[in-house]
Amino acid sequence: MEKTLILYPAIAMMLLTLFLYIKSYLESIKALKKGDIKHSFFKAYKGDAPDIVEVSRQTLKNQFELPVFFYFLITIILVFDAVSQLDIIFGWLFVVSRYLHCYIRLSSNHILHRAKLFQLGLIILIVWWIISIYNIL
Image (cartoon, rainbow, N blue to C red; front, side, top):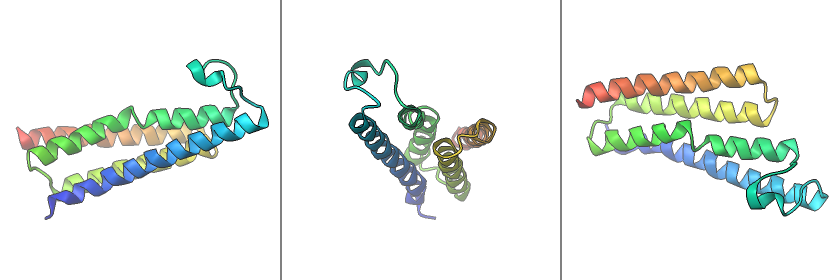
């Protein structure tokens, strides 16, 4: 098996993050043009901002929380040359959970569904970390 296959889920996560950067930027520009937000808001991100701007910003911010453990685990298994088919499956499962989480947050923002997807992604990561550390050590 080609160990670089584990990079595809990481690339998919990177693309999601880039999409969210663009979305957040465009939502901010749109709010500025409509007068819903002032330039001063961006100095310290304090004050009132439309919900769509806050949701976009928070969704982007989330990509630098739980996914950090995902990227770090991929780095570890690559460094130890311990990539398995199971790692690729876990990687894609995590990515799908994050894409769905973002979709829900940016559409209906149904908290219960969003929370379940977050929990699913967290469980996937925890199990994947335990298996990977066991296999490496």
